[in-house]
Image (cartoon, rainbow, N blue to C red; front, side, top):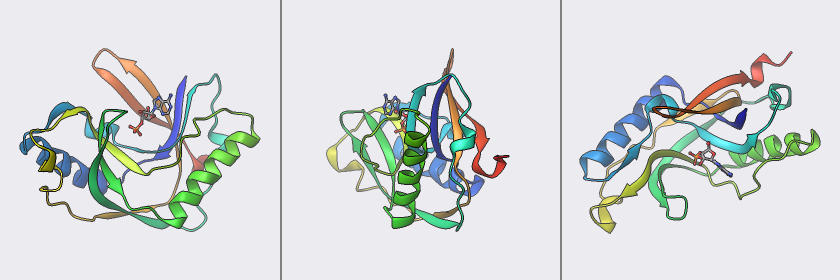
Length: 170
Ligand code: 3AM
């Protein structure tokens, strides 16, 4: 299984992300838009691993909010994303996820945590200023749980599916 751990957008948050994505496309940005059903915020990328790791997802003891910020681009990864405002709670949740994996001997990517939600892969911009010209709303959602995702390469592209939740740990 190809696995990663992340946050699943609520229906409302997903809708706002889809609207932002549509605005970016209308502004002339080309590329490969993610299907809104695939939107997620990655906390830790595991990659190939033979077992379900739901048991190691940290519980969210105190729900907290995350809020969108300006869209941006990771040039190297060729990704256009919706920014997510950094916060103490979010950073410590990502750290807790990575620590749990370390303790369980499960390897994960150790790139610094930079909260974002990918909207368009391989973006081509009509001009450099297009991103700052998009009006975006700083919508929020409440984080209540951490999700384990599987990533499957299907004929139509990648499909990310929640296969475990921190609330479901036995
Ligand atoms: O959350 P985003 O969309 O930025 O790019 C992949 C995607 O990131 C990333 O994990 C998320 C779910 O697939 N990813 C894929 N391979 C990776 C790797 N080897 C990776 N992240 C780090 N290391």
